Length: 468
Image (cartoon, rainbow, N blue to C red; front, side):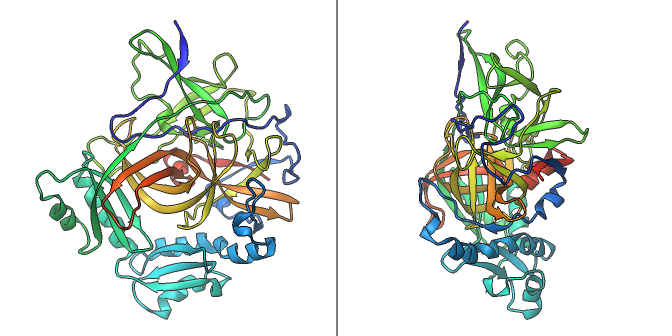
């Protein structure tokens, strides 16, 4: 029988496996080639501890020799310093969902815009009292609160659990909830959806949406496995008798509820109820079965196919075999160097920058967050609705990147004497909005990732592996 890779194509809306190639070579001890940000120490931190790590001043991301916006380092630091305030602002919004709505970064002004539901100094001070850069935060009064948006989404998903409602996108800047549907055959869909939401909140749009599943990469790591490396498993056979296997990417490294060292990746990388006649086990490899086995795929998430109210992240993990370990790092600025991951990014700030690293593209790609808290109806692969996903634009992720590293806050850390990243989540896929009857959400390609806090919660992780 011939063994080969195979791209799995879903019927309607499914996850895009993404992976990036040409990853750097490291020594057997897992150390990098020249980034002095590495201390040689790796520790386990809880999500809360990791999110509180201060990794220094945000710095320009250099790609192809060009810096972000052509700003000097000093100008960039000044313009972007307010982003460090986003976690405290986000927490305040979550604690007061009736008084606030959302927030976003204004790239022209270098400010964070915080939406309040009433023009009250008492309300504004709940944010001001938690931050240092008060002059870098603006307030905008809007009609609909975070509570309005969140509860409307829940009611709509619970009613339309069959995928007729494909996507629910909170449009933060316009204070609207965009509901994208496949069709309205009976002519009453609009009225039904509007009756489930806060009056005036939703905009209902028809759209054609599709996605695909992707795979590839050909590098074998001799030492610790960094974020974005290729992993393979899930051997299956097709009707012709050919054997094929899925390929995904490393997201980050963690400790599970049983104190096992695990590699976190996408949930859809593991088959749902595999056919015992064609499935050979849960053992996974880096890079293929002709290379080293790294562990067993031992846990993945699912969401109900009969109720849209229990959406989860698309995530899972491989429990490492003894002697196999992962490196909390990503390959940047070069293929022979890497930058340590020292903390967690939990802000998901619209307008902010994140960086994708899978195993097919082969280098770090810059992304801009466009929409947050997006709920997709995937409809297969073990998932109905996936909640709180993030849509970005930038260089398109390509075949095999699913599960790969999403990093954020590229920063210079004086204490380490080098550059660092924080882990933001894992790459889920890519979706095409081919036709959009909307003047708000543009047609085009959006990359999708699951935020770190969702993955951490759903997999019941005990800690994240970071560089000290």
